[in-house]
Picture 1 (cartoon, protein in one colour):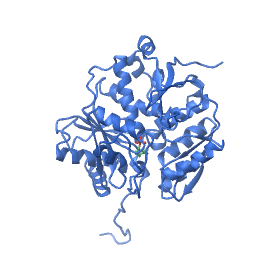
Picture 2 (picture 1 turned 90 degrees about the vertical axis):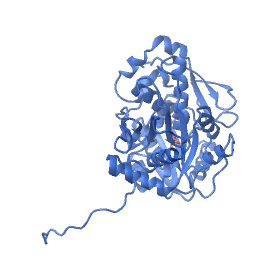
Picture 3 (picture 1 turned 60 degrees about the vertical axis):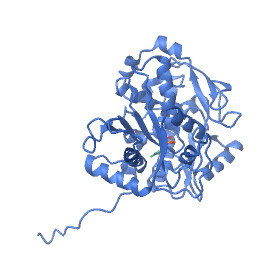
Picture 4 (picture 1 turned 30 degrees about the horizontal axis):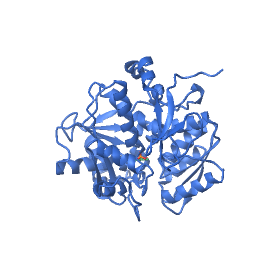
Length: 400
Ligand SMILES: *Cc1c(COP(=O)(O)O)cnc(C)c1O
């Protein structure tokens, strides 16, 4: 006997054309080659669910099941998810003004857990048995972990300069991992070729509809943590943009549900590295679609994404929210990481540090005011990344 969840997924919709697609069968991109977005019967959710009762459930993103696509409880794959904490940068700024949402506390140490847990659960529900994906690191380890948990095979390919720890943790968690001599979009083309041959299902960012639903829970959780209100501005390190698009979608759903105390939406800020900033370039040029960024480089691997299939969804959310897109260089990112670690005791990942560097830069130019409440996303534990050499030598044979 299977345990059914109160499920309200009604259909899927092309993010560009709004064409409708049936729920309950396997989908990749839409016929227009664009991401598919999950749509729910929100009036059914409104009449059957209570926001505070949901928030009072056990910790972790699976509590939002009425707003997730999974139908059968047995397909849920869990590894001890938590609601991630909000940590104020209270020594560096006025108390409560700048807050880090620390996603590094999730299983596999990054917010990729949110998206991949839901994508894997849906893959299981829809009968897929082999998933493949290109990754710059954290997505691969999250996919490997959740897929192994439910007995699904995985093949993962990453650029050969992906941090060793990501490659090793992914392999240890049961995936077949390849290190390839190309950037993530080239790895993605290889995965697509295998999928076209029927070897596996392509689970690339936004090329299937459910990862964004998992990422959406960041927005739901944030709203609940802030007493069903939203901050003034959100700084999000943007690679494929799943989280930014997902949160924007979450806020729209919360408004339609009538679950927000105030419907003031935050300005969404897409943060990129100056060595790979296709979204910033398109934003500055007033374009809706971004072009491929040549010779991408930055040590913040999670945002080293030269082309994003959801580019227009990121840019639409940034513009609709009156936000902006901003690039910061690697030196500013490293400075920000060291400042926050030293002054606040909080070790950010480089991508998370990029959001703080962007915040400081926006503060200096007046794009953000000092009294506005800002949320910065730290997407992974700082412990996964190389750190500067440290430790003075102490000779115990020669006491000073
Ligand atoms: C994947 C990743 C990002 C980018 O997230 P998107 O939602 O795909 O834009 C940022 N930082 C880290 C550490 C990541 O792993």
